[in-house]
Image (cartoon, rainbow, N blue to C red):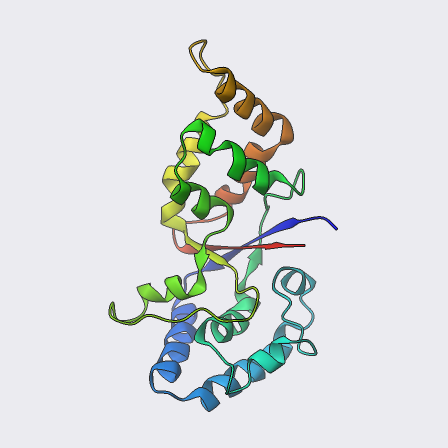
Length: 215
């Protein structure tokens, strides 16, 4: 079965921030019953979103309902469920080929990209790191044991990456190594660079890029 890269834009609005604060407040207060009830109540709202189901497996009749019970609920999964209805689908790294995320992760390091840049572009950070913008610096949140809560990258963190991708659309100079030339060719001919640029172009500074890679 194909390995697919899914991408969404999540606008940072006051309503978004209220949801995050409500989730974190319930968790910090130890109100697991309240957090569970909030998330379970919001789950049916996304039952009809085929794109969300394909990316995150949030089917109300599936395993997620069990992971949202008070003894298992986590702030990351609860927040994803409550925010999922706000996610706007955008072009992903599977737009041209289902392996373009793999090609980018493989070839960009050859072109001088560091691991952090590749991570932000292809996979993003755990949702729990997103909470750092909305909670006390001393607070840390354990990742959910539910398989997929998405990768989250702040829109402003993508601007430098966008610039580096644009540079890859120009022809390489004669001084580049054969390895660099081959990597640039592979990314260009696969459509991976075009897919990545289209994805980032859809994300504004006041957005989160939310990604998921599924089999």
